[in-house]
Length: 155
Image 1 (spheres, one colour):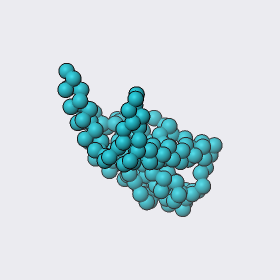
Image 2: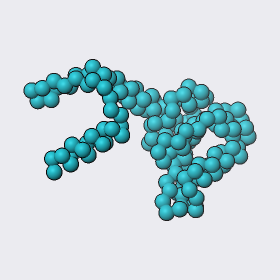
Image 3: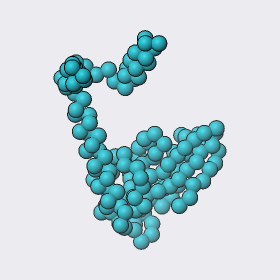
Image 4: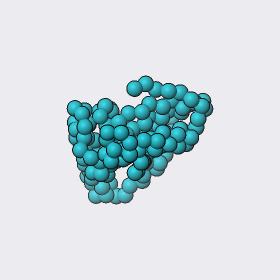
């Protein structure tokens, strides 16, 4: 499966890709994560009519052009942030790559959950001779601001 390039914004490319999928399948759910458009679809034509499957479209936009690459789970894409709810709603995987890919998606989410649970209020971190206790989260944006402020205070 190749990529194609055309003039579009990211929003236009997302609408176009969902419309393309809708030509042969009903889009049951979709989510955009960065440059990835994940969708759960149910085929309504062909030999697999009625089958629910997971698809991925990579969309990169620069200078008014969109580069689009379409994949599905049977290709075992090397992206694992597919929403877990799609795995639960999709039919059994087809082909040799879909099953192992789904396991990697589950492992990705389990690892992400484990990391998040480590960073809870009250968590203790040893650094050198000191033990620090996390009293409250600042969030991602505050963390970036704090890193810039700390770096600039030493300059």
